[in-house]
Length: 357
Ligand SMILES: Nc1ncnc2c1ncn2[C@@H]1O[C@H](COP(=O)(O)OP(=O)(O)O)[C@@H](O)[C@H]1O
Ligand SMILES: CCCC(=O)OP(=O)(O)O
Image (cartoon, rainbow, N blue to C red; front, side, top):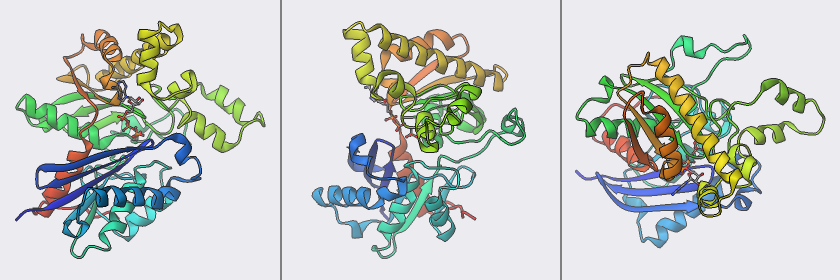
């Protein structure tokens, strides 16, 4: 029996779609969204119709018959902390994706779009897989320095796991027998300590922790942020945007496109662009060092992935700083589309599916 699966990956700056016939990718498209295009939408969930129409138009243009789909797998979503795995859409999951229990992120649209689209396809199923809220952190990693706060597991779980499995396959070992430090360098930056198949610690890529990224501030001096909050000059929304969306390279260089920053630094000898690239590499390397201590120095490999892993200058800079810990392997971009489809395929072929409660 053969299956048709659609992968949906809504990101902060793009919507990626891919069609699979069993293991084979037959169509893939990356729709970039300019920031002005998304500006009119107050909340992420307000983008639902806009993204749905783009997807349906793209599939229509490609001449694909939606009725032949067996499953749609979306990248999810800011729901409650969950175990790694595939979850079938249900009323609870729908509700929590809409509410954004742990905050707002474009990936929450993945499950909602999958659910809405299968509604018109008899027999088709809607899933999310390894959402950004996968939580395998140890108790000690959760404790923050104040009783009102705890550290959260919000990261690129899907790509962390997919790239780790790809690496494990390349060295002919089960992922569950390896200790890895994985750094996803993208819109957000997350660096995780993978111990025998579980991400036991990771910086929170949404709420302002760890290294800065192309559009996020990472950790900031808390007292100075508190002063800004009470200065009367900024709204809560302004402050949230400083941390997530308009922070990081966006704030330092006025763009979140690392290709532009790289061009400025390398071709135009812009000292500020070079300093920002150096600082990004420095901070990512520091976080990798921290995660190596979580694994007590027993690290089989360090994996660099995400869009910024295409940037040779940053990769070389990080590698120079951390290669004393373990060999560094680079997986530029992501393996999320295939991971979504293969997770869905496994369920269609009889693997267990998890129920979100
Ligand atoms: N070839 C490249 N060289 C340098 N940076 C790149 C390249 N391609 C993408 N990027 C940067 O990667 C970042 C986006 O990474 P990506 O992994 O696609 O994002 P996300 O984590 O949101 O999926 C952006 O800052 C983009 O400019
Ligand atoms: C940390 C959650 C995932 C995330 O940051 O994704 P993007 O880099 O795609 O925004």
